[in-house]
Image (cartoon, rainbow over all chains, first blue to last red; front, side, top):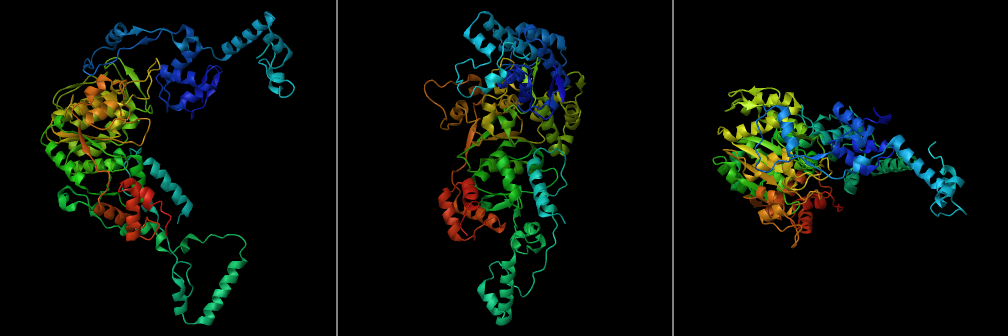
Length: 166
Length: 466
């Protein structure tokens, strides 16, 4: 059982499914995260190395401040690799020179856990502040999106409020 | 004596684990470990099986037997709940699963006897500790089939003799001109042909490297990391497993070979020229991160030596020409030539790298629909493409990798003599639920149109006739 940012990830679960245990990460975001961290589809949490877990934790702690992703150079069919004794710094420098910058990254705007809940809370507070219909319905604890209230408004009556998520 | 249910549980577990176990098995297939005690057939009681009316009459003591029959009938009527018969009472030969091996007497597969005279005969594959099938694994459907049969065997066909002649020619020349791809309709016997070629070369003192499920290289089931030196995504765990299996199967032959040049390895300095290939392989098996470099080095050394021919056999050959399921950090799918293991196989398949003596043989497979025959490979082999049209894109790199492949076509239908032999094997193994007669054979042969897989699985094993 690995704990990342306060969320327990079960050892026997596939990594790309375990990441959905975070608030704000669904299946698509989880797959993108796994691709970003080079975690294959059938990797379980117990198969992750310590380095991968550290990378995951540091990425999720603040996705917006991570250094921008660059498109790494890939070998053409006739490429001959340099000998294995080449120092790693030289190789990394060469790769950095050959790499190209990328445009928008969907994971940069990722907001999970507390930040994600705050976004929802702020949106509802904004609606209330401007005095909109949506804000009023949240305040009354009734359905917001035009559902029936004559019957079946149980979830809205239970959960809708201005100060949602405490 | 183990109860029957736990025997079945152990059997299914070994069914799934055989291709993944690196440890050398005890030499006995799992199903042989049952030892059962059978009850003796009790005299004077008419058995519920097909002894029939006549035997009851033969007893002669009509009154007594009728009496016992009546008593038995009344006894049966008194039971309110079903009580299963104890296992030891199952005296019918159908239940004697530990004595099946005596039934199927087949000649052993041996390269010396493989001539035209042996076509349409079934030969049993040998089973020993370091058998290529046991160590490298088998395609999934063949694994299940060989578990059901008491001995793994196959029927020798004309196309087998063709391929064997080609392998004999390849043992003298290089793999540059001997890159074969086995193609044919689904279920016609491509994987089995590849197994026959593999077994033949192994017995002829070749060094063999077999990938039974090449789809596992490209379906995102093994770890991958970007390597700044080779500018590809390496697959260290798969490379490590390949090295282990290569060493287990070909150990004695690799002992005779020595490296011609020094081999540089990351962070571990240089392996000097003149080390045995076994020691070189062990450098890769000690540390997984070094396995891809060591595997490439071992294969290039094997390519230069001329003592032993080398066979590279790949099932699911089309999978290494399809876009992989791996994703790069930008979430786009990685091409197969940007992953270390498929790239290595593509280089040998295209002739960019070659064996001085040996061949590359691949078998197409249509089982997995997520990795279908790609357009570039279909055009190179002269097969009808699955997707075509004026706007269909072709990847130029894959077209280059597919140049020069020669096709070996497996006939769609078994000949009657081959089908007869196959029928005989399954009948002698008591696997057919119906009575194995000519009528059943001809019916199933016609229904399946001679297709081997349909003949066995949809015909003989699924028949409801009695």
